[in-house]
Each structure stands twice: as C-alpha cells, then as structure tokens.
Length: 128
Image (tube, rainbow, N blue to C red; front, side, top):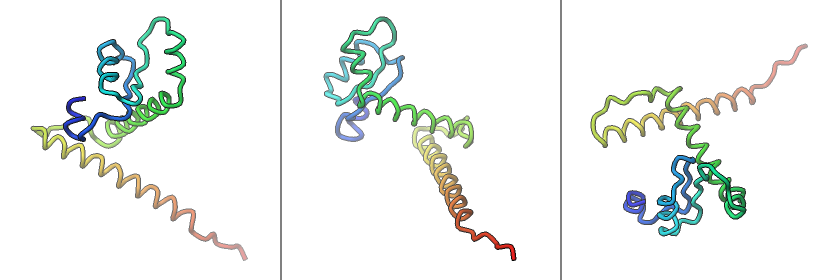
C-alpha cells in the first residue's frame, strides 16, 4: 500500500489477490486504507453468511476476474515471449526488460489482429 500510495498518490480502488494473502492483518490494512473492494478470498474454513455474500458480489467477482486476466498475461509473457530469465542487473534495467517484453507482446498481438482483419477483407475469386 505504501509503495502504491507513493507512486500514484492514493490507495487503489480495488485490491485483488489469491487466497494466500488472506489473513487478519491484510484485511485490516485494506479496511484502514478505505479500499473500495478488497477482493481477498477466504483461505479456508467455514464462511459466514456475510462472507459468502461478499464473495458472491459482482464487485468481488469482477476484481477476481481482472486478477485472473493479469495472471494469464504474465503466463503468456513467461512461456511464449521469452521472459523466463532476466540477466539485467538493477531495478531500472529490470523495468526496461519488462517494458520491452510487454511492448513486443503488444506489437505481436497487433500484427496478429491486422493479419486476421486483412484475411477477412480479401475478395474471393469467382469461378467462371
């Protein structure tokens, strides 16, 4: 939270994690920071009716879907775009490495979409 606040000037509106972050301390930090939706699934045990309702709420589910999308994108970068190992030393070089990998991925995705669009536009030859 401190790093986010320092970087962006405020706390996030939505905070989504996996079950591993569920503990009283993290829940308290989110509550104290007045985060709109702290989407942290309960780790285990019996859920109260209130907790069940919260985890079934549209805001909670939307935050979890967004987090899952981020996890998927990280997986694509890791497996398909060569981000398995960063040999760069230092924070700035690491940031540049990540930025270049994301840029390369976005350019490849744009090229893929353009190729698909162009293949749909090609007129089909008519048999005489």
